[in-house]
Image 1 (tube, rainbow, N blue to C red):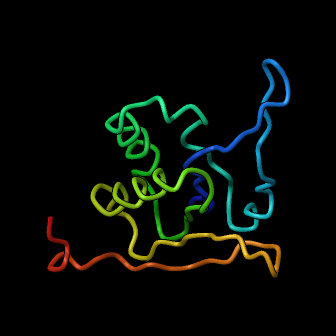
Image 2: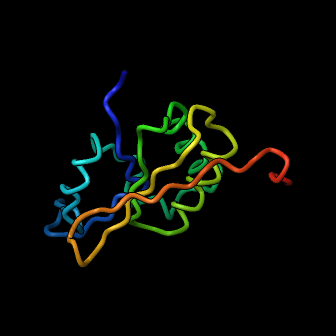
Amino acid sequence: MKNPRVFIIHRAVIQIGVDLVADKHDLSPAKNWGILQYILEQDVVNQSSDSIMFNLKDALEDFTDADALLCTGDPMMLVIAGIVLERYCLNWNSLRILKWDKYTRNYRPYYIGRIPVALNVG
């Protein structure tokens, strides 16, 4: 069995020099849930939605119940990732989403089950 992965859909960075950027947030606590795997870089706003969908579909095609999505970055990218997972990725039944809890100062998992085919209209 593969090690669990934590998919970070959109990398949020800050400019700290002419050619130097750093992550905007310390995401290291998410390593408790798996290996961090970035999908889209900060310049995705300039990409077409088709290009974004293709990159997400390619990166998430072997997503399983052991993996997780990290809620950070551009909310639109998180929505597109959810659509991609529901439509194209067949290896999961329960989606684990990691959300920052400011009180415990750690990530908490939230689980979403797959939409039954009868309800998936459209």
